[in-house]
Length: 159
Image 1 (cartoon, rainbow, N blue to C red):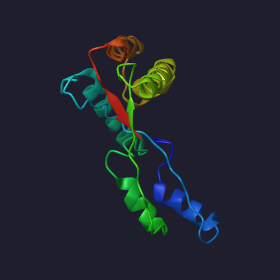
Image 2: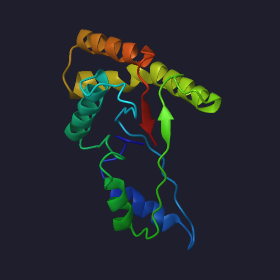
Image 3: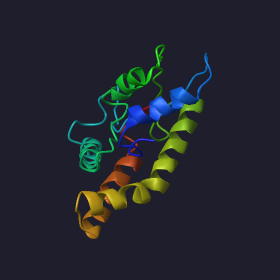
Image 4: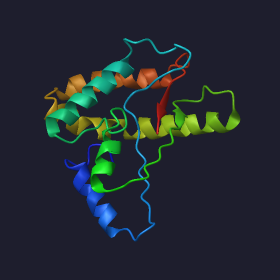
């Protein structure tokens, strides 16, 4: 839901209003940051650019894409009236690099999901919000796709 709303507190207040006493709301979202625990993703990789570009695009639209990264969602939920906010962070691999069979499969699905949605997710924001030329977007996405396929990167996103 990152990037969908300008006023998250208002959304959470409406959710809170609609819940019966004792009810709960589950919100799942992803981090823009692609990380690695083993240092396989260099700090100057396309993934750093990725996060910075989409954080800036969110700022320009007034609809943050860095919902999880800056923990504002916790503040907004509290402002809406939620009192027992619990968090659970899940490291979701990006690609089939994990040794564990389950996480390898999860990573392959995660990579596939990103690859198939990459252009649709990026094109509007990069051309209309960031004012990139179409060809610039395509060249940049080529670099992102190469990073997705780089077997030396042991990256993950957090949910």
